[in-house]
Every structure is written in structure tokens, then in C-alpha cells.
Image 1 (cartoon, each protein chain N blue to C red):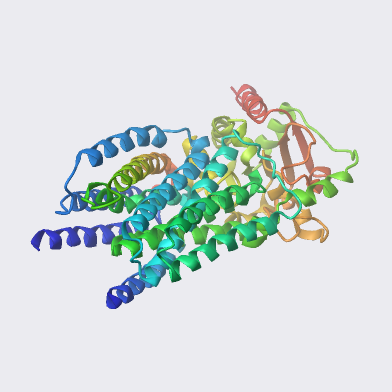
Image 2 (cartoon, rainbow over the protein chains, first blue to last red):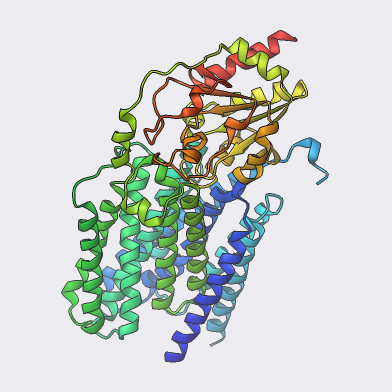
Length: 102
Length: 460
């Protein structure tokens, strides 16, 4: 249990550094798609909501089911909407014909 | 055992795909591959989760996945001008999911919650609920359902800090006494109120910073949820989202020469009245579309500086036509984009890309600023404060120190503006009274359209 926690803290720290280095490189041109994409990825919280809504609970079963179901709806709309709009935006970015060789 | 291992492996692959997804987003050439990687990772993780043997009932999961998708499709197809409010709304949805799961986890586990677990669970719920209402407020302001003017009152910061301190205190009590179950609703309700109060004093021009900050909070709350559920995948996704929001907030507040605390606790509203008071009618030079077209046609290098006003007037397609008409005559046209132009980071680039303007013509402030002295015409469309030379040399100005686009160094400056009314911050712009500045009064879309007509009429 204690070891689990420490591992999680390591994961958080490493992911923080990776995130910082990777996102620093994203051109200001793409900052809006960056935000909509990270938002879609963040909706991975849906996995927690799925387990909450699907698992069998001894007490508070109705509460878990209701909250879990609403949480899945909220997260799924972010996943679907986030990926759609990010792709729509990125499709619009075109380079001019004169400098295509680069 | 083997199915548990399989699930963990799908999470591992999904984590790698998420990192690659953001890595590929660094350049427009590989960015779409990034979206596919993200989609694949998401699909793997969801399918993996559905294989979990602990799940006994799939009905509600299926129903919720369908409803969520039905809501998501229109949210993915909003107009590009509405992207900021859509983004704020999706921060709210993300935070809602995290808050609800956190709440359920508390009631399922209480009163047997170890102190550290209760601490991260509190963080999850506090950040989640304040981001939920804060983002709804931001979306409402951006959609113009709510008044966009900052609303301030005496003792505002004190009230806000008191609310936050109250929520943290309750979290502290619950960490020590997790059996005080009836305290929990306050842990959700107080941050819900705090989120509303936090956004009330924020005005339109501060939205890029605030949206980024809310983005960061949403990510952090998801990472906290990862600790509660012991899910490494969630910790990584939350950390990526959190650091992305954080980096963007830093870039935005630097571009406005303001600190986070200043954006959140010092609404621009107070300075506004005093600055607008001393306006007097100074002479300006104005020009007609014919004159503007003649000057533009004679130029070699033109830099267009667009602001949110261009988006409001829906003028971006006319601007594209102008860009084409000038390029045809051998005039080099480029765009200089301030980091806070628009209502969210990078918003202006998306609007111009939508109008089919190639992205290699879109330059950031740092890239373009050195070129203004060699620029024949700087054409400012719907931007005001980001071109205000007062930021450079008037120490008393509320925007003093904010990095600006140096349009006043171009040989000729043209400003398309409806009237002489001051910009968002209510600060007079000395740029308009320079000898080299021509004011083009009118609606951005109509005026640019007239210039285009002149240009195409003149030489067939």
C-alpha cells in the first residue's frame, strides 16, 4: 500500500516533466488544438466512472450508479467532442503552395 | 489474473499513445497523427476497462456512453468562433466527471479512509467542483449569456479567500476524522460557490489566461483522482493536461505582463474608469477604401494584425480575399499574432486557418516584431490594446510593460475601427494620433470588402 503510493508519486513527477518538455515544443500556432486535445485525453477519467457505474456495491449502490452514469456521460461527450473538433481544426491548417518543399 | 494483466497492458499502451499524441502535436505536419494516436489510446483504455471482471452490470454504462456520444457530436461541430466557450464547457464536463466520481468514492469508502487518501480525495473534489462552476461561468461569459463586464465589489478578495480557506479547513477535519460524513457536502458546495465568485470579476480580455488556468485545474483534479483510484494512466493523463494548462497560463499572463494573482484577484475594472476619464478629442487622419487600396497596392511588405474584433465582425474571409488580391500584385502579406489575440490561446490562428490562410504566413509576436521597421503598411483589424505604444513608454498606463506588436514602427499604419471608442481595457491608444497612422472607420468586414473591390476593379 505504502509502496503503491510512492510509485504513484514517481509516475506523477515523471509525467509532469514529460508533459512540460513535450508541451513546451508545441507551436503557438496550435495552442487551441492543444487545449482541445489535452481536454479529450483528460476525459480518460471515464475509466474510473465506468468501474463506478458497473461494479456491485453493498451499500450506497444507487448513489454510485447514478453518479457514475452521469460522470460517464460528461466524460464521453468530452472524448467524442474533443477529438472531433481537434481534427477539424488541424485539417484547416495548410501550408502555402510556394513553400511546400520545406 | 490474465485478464487483469491484459487490462493493465492496455493502460500501459494507452499511456504511451497519449504522450506520443502530444509529441506529434508539436508541428502542423504531424499533428493529425497525434489525434489518431490519442483516439487509439482512448479506445484501448475503454475496451480494457470494459473487460474488468468487477463490472456486473453493463446497461447503464452502455446507455451513458451512447448519450455522451450524442452530446459530444454537436459539441465537436461548433463554429470556430465558438471554440473558446466550447472549451470552457468541456473543462466543466471534465471537472463534473471527476467531482462525481470523487463524491461516490467518499461515500463508498467512508469512514475507513486513510489520511493521505482523504487528502487527495479532498483535492480532487475541491479542484473539480471549483473548476466545474468556474468553467460554466467562463462559458456563459464567452457565449454572452452572462454579462462580460467584470463585476467587482468591496472585500471581494477577502470573501474569496475566506471561502477557499473554509473548504481547506473542512478537508483538514475530514483527513483527521473521516467519520464526520455529514461534513462532506460542504466540501463540494463551498468550492462550487468559490468557482462562481472567482470568475465574476474576470473580463473578456483575461479569458485566455483564465481558460488556461481552469484547464490546469481540471488536469490536476484528474491526477488526484488517479491517486484515489490508484490508476497510473489517469495520473499521467491528468499530469499532461495539468502541465499543458499551466504552461499556457504562464505564456498568457506573460503576454499581458500580469501575474496569476493579478488576473484572479485584481480585476481590470478598477483602473478602467480613471484611465478613460482624461480622453479629449485629438485630431486623427482618416482615409477612404480607395485611398487605402492605393497605398496597399503600392506597398512591398504588408503585415496584418488581427484582433478579436476581426472575429466578431466575421471579417476573416474578406481578409483572405484581400491577402490574395495583394499577393497577386506581388505584395508580400503576412500576419502578426499577439499571444492573447482572441478569447483563448491560439484562437486567432484557428480562425485564419479556417479562412484558408496558409499557416506559414501566421507569425507570432516574437517572430514578426523585428520586421516592422521594414514593413510598408501595418494593417490593424479589430485589435487595440495589443498595439498600444503606451505599453512601451507610458509608465502610468495600466497596460505599461505588456509586450505589444510594434506596428507604430511600420512606415504606414492603417487601423480599421468602428469609431474612436476605447478598447476593452478602456485605455486611449496614442497610435491613432500618429502622423503615419490612417484611421479607416467602418465595419471590418465591409471595409475590407471595399478595399478588395477597389483592388480588383483598378486592374481588372
